[in-house]
Length: 134
Image 1 (cartoon, helix red, strand yellow):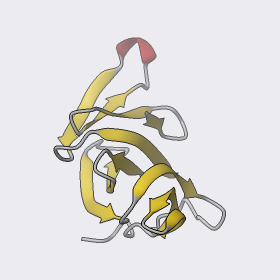
Image 2: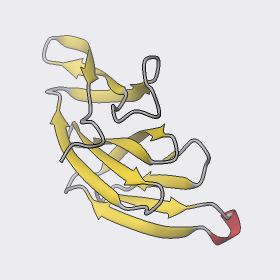
Image 3: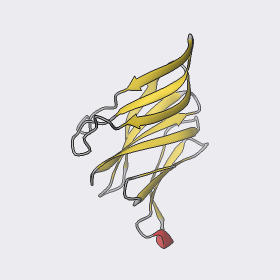
Image 4: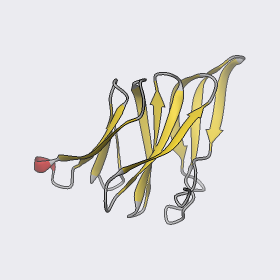
């Protein structure tokens, strides 16, 4: 699970490879607003970063050791897939690095990925596409 900064939306992943966006503005009336099947492999972890009032950038670590990157617009919550990154190793954990991230820009924060590559433990840095990328 991951949520936006205000807790209005929660993104959930499943073992069947789907991601689901749930509106939680009113907790007693939480509702599913969008779903997307990323692929055959299940989702093992989700991490997100909020662009203030605009969208979430979400990274989904998959069971096939790939990372799916997508956005969820906050005004009209629909999942827009950017694509997949194959880092060439086993993913153990991931997080967005917010230090030099400006939430009002179109640039996404860096994604840090820790895992095991062919030569041993590794740290990868992934730079997602900007918000205005087609």
